Image 1 (tube, each protein chain N blue to C red):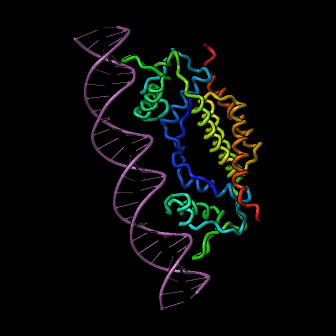
Image 2 (cartoon, each protein chain N blue to C red):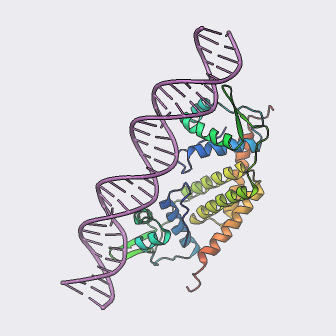
Image 3 (cartoon, helix red, strand yellow):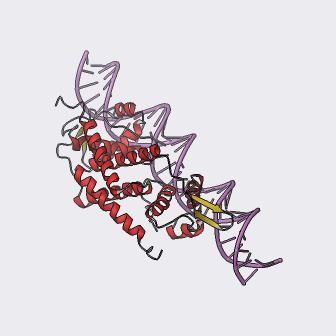
Length: 134
Length: 134
DNA sequence: AACACTGTACTATCAATCTAGTACAGTGGT
DNA sequence: ACCACTGTACTAGATTGATAGTACAGTGTT
């Protein structure tokens, strides 16, 4: 599972939303899989159930998750993907923010890029762990 | 000068603090230079003077800026640089956050790194602009 | 002396986020 | 029928960030 950074300026519901999306893109969650219940995930992440519910609701609204009433929440069979233009805009915004931070810390372009690749590799490995049984 | 993104989750005072640091590392501000007055910068960025004052105060506390009472605020002659360990930790955190976002958007490692390099180049060029007269 | 600037320091208010607690309807297993 | 689980919905409080407004002391210019 993923971690929550309570000191981050990014709201927790957003961190959870991104975390679920990451697990799907990496294959740790596939269509039809059940996601943890609101209360379970809240206990695991040491977070309020309302906050988890908010994240799930957003993912449901966007067609990434689907609810079976009384049963639980599952990854949609046909997970809708966001428009390409919107995706590129978000990626660009995130890159700009990171590049700005790297610059303010005096990091070179090469160092900034290398640090991203390292983090990317680490995240994918962490997310795939505990998932070899599939 | 730099821009403020009011929709970002990062607080404005932090964006201003990073912006000043960027201008210093890029050379758009050198030791001895005056930074805009609290009220001027607030008007330029369309932000409350209190918010700018908060950013300046943090930079003063860290030895990046220095105040001459009644005159203004200036870039310190011997700008203290943060500890290497702390700098690396911040860079790493920022890289992790960006990599996580890129992953949740389904971007490949190469695409994520390339987008950073592009943003980095763009930022340095923008910041150096209007500074050729030095 | 008067004025226009500087930074600094308050108070008050608004919005967003997170938390705690409670409640209710739907589902499945016993 | 009962129980344990599911998502959902609501109230209320604390915290943080940003805003508006006001005020005061120090500095340089006129």
